[in-house]
Length: 454
Image (tube, rainbow, N blue to C red):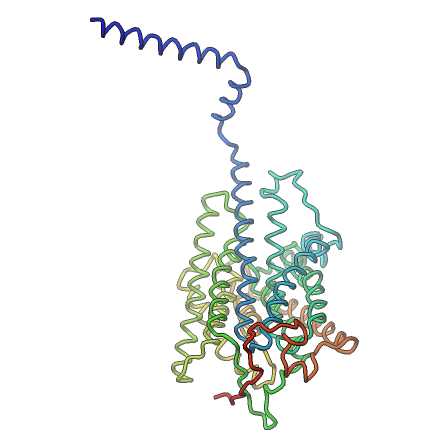
């Protein structure tokens, strides 16, 4: 009986203390308000804002990592005596793009009037005064757009490698990232004339990013001419083999990863169920197109060359990725596979074509980014009924005329005024010696054998 009485008394004490605590807590207005606020549902607009901003930041970081991919791909495909120069070029061009997009590039793209030709030449500053109306933070959007600009500049670096001097390349990079890229991007992504008059569609930039880099690279290759020893006196094509195919392969895997941010982030939203599904579908189509680009080159090399060219296979992956970039959302998986496969065919056909035309593209960026970029853009209306073949053709033509003409003028102007090419002696010794002063591979002997192409 005494034990039962103790249990009853203990229970009553606990209940009393709890009740007093509740009353005391209820009499505290701040605590009561905090409890009520915590229990209140989060506004849907806030949730959307957070997820959209998170998409830009995470996907932007993934795209930024593509700078490492381009660096490793190029460092692996150039000769050892130029690898350190490639590393210096890539980290510097990314930095130049960052500064130029801040100074003028962003507002040139997005400060254009509807149907206009160019935005405002002004410095970007974050404005979150109407953040919920925008749907994402201003800085997250700026960062995501900036890494796209850096990607276009990276394309040029590989093509003109092993003979371009550093400072002319840096000057061109500044003009490309501050003016050339932003002007043509404003025509579509900024709501300019290509968007308003022709309904041009380029989801993530097969033309606006990749063909832009490709045309700028082609202009640079024409202005520079081929590397010493690339072509023999009797017209033979010599293989100037790169320093490390494993390093180049690592670079392509990094780029492949980065492309999920490139295309997936271009959905520009992750705050709804439909957006989440769209990003997922974009990932699948992007991956499938790249895989088919690889397999197509592997099969073609096996059937027609008897040996599989690894560097061409690596570009097959990039060609498939570039091709699907113009419209990675609307195709069915089998259509994405076909788009990537055609990209692989383009790589296989155009790579030797450029060599026979004596256009020296060290890493094969022109076939992968220019030709596959145009293919991916023109095929958009097959899966996206909002686009038209006329509009796509006008967009491709406008991009080509503007970017190639302006780039060629800049390269030749610098060639006349300050010179753009290393001397014959510097090129023979390697740019690591003349431009950097330290080799990428300290045990490099300085000797190389030139082998005729098969």
